[in-house]
Length: 268
Image (tube, rainbow, N blue to C red; front, top):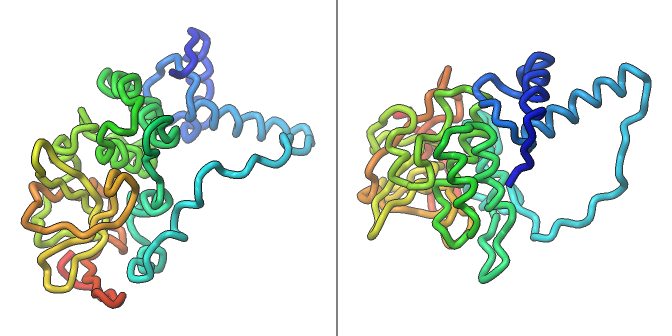
């Protein structure tokens, strides 16, 4: 749980007045001392230090990470186009940075995954999101919707239209995200919702397999990790495109071949 105190709301309001980027207008004042407030305070103090001619204060070297490196270094060769021009949509780039994040077997849980629910609640302080931050304390609870939500809030830059849907932990809730697109026209960055026995799954489209029967999804809780995996297009319940202000150049239909080649289609 984040620390709370009535004075924290005043800090949040002052940060927004100084620079809305430190505490975006879409973010509710919630009396919580969480990641967004901490980043804003750090930026404000850095400006004051610079104005007074003070060198940045450091606390010495950070300890080595407890987990193996994650991110683009774990991206398969055939998906390297996601790192090249034209750049992939921001939700995909956020997701690529998290490739390799693992659900920990047994106890304890992976604190990185658990913290995502708190981050979402900090960015969008709805009653459900605050409940989800309290509820999500075990990475054995399905977390594909949680992964999609943290990608969405990090890519939203405070824009309400890009925030996760209500009840985002449920994969099928993502049928309310963005705008509908025909699954046959799915492009890189589109959110794909699928049905499965007992529920659903949500993932990001990062390519279509040659032949068109399957697509590649970058998502969480895929083999207990953030991975890219193939899925049958026949399973798709909905394809939803984020509410872009302008379609990113990388939001295109990509055909990915088994041997690694990728080619662009004009269908996006």
